Amino acid sequence: IGVIIGFAVQVIFAAIQLAGQLVGFQMGFAIVNVLDPQTSNQISIVAQFQNILAMLIFLTVGAHHWFLRAVADSFTLVPPLGFNFSSGLINEIIRLSGNIFSVGVKIGAPMVAVLLFTSMALGVIARTVPQMNIFIVAFPIKITIGLLFLGLSLPLLNVLLTKLFNNLGNEFYLIFRLMG
Image 1 (cartoon, rainbow, N blue to C red):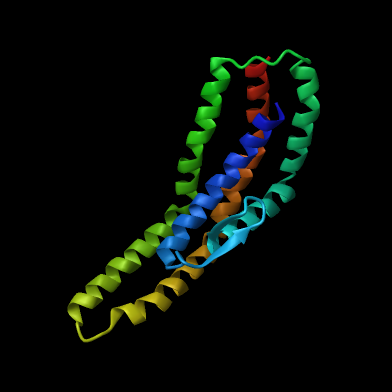
Image 2: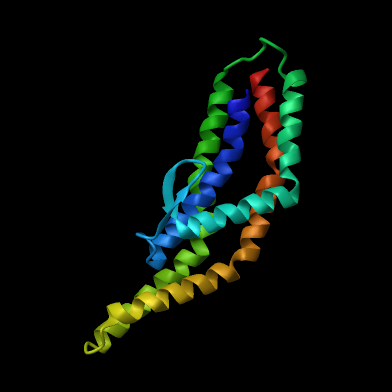
């Protein structure tokens, strides 16, 4: 029961890391990785930043209270030895797993789109001015634009994560209903 509760929360953080990986790759930070102490994997520096920010939003919104309440309520909603691993529960776990990609794309889409348009503009510049070494110019431009739009997209990230974290209570009770 605890693993499934933890998985429901971890799905949101995995989506945030996916969005950070997408954005970091588009910015040119594919080789700039840091070690994530939780998973012992190397992740993009943008993904680590967004993950830390999501953890702060998780605590600010009070979603950790939903998590603790779910653990306490699991003893009453799913009686001891009353755990039922039903097909509805499996479908809910699969739906939560599928949300990793859709939420990750929702979070990273604005910045990926801006960086794609930047790459297209730099491609046009490279074709019109062949004397210019676009590789040397493009790297700092993409980093600057990526960091600028990372800062501009923080309110969007806050709204989306607040909505996701506030919906955790409903997700937990749906999972408990499918277990019992």
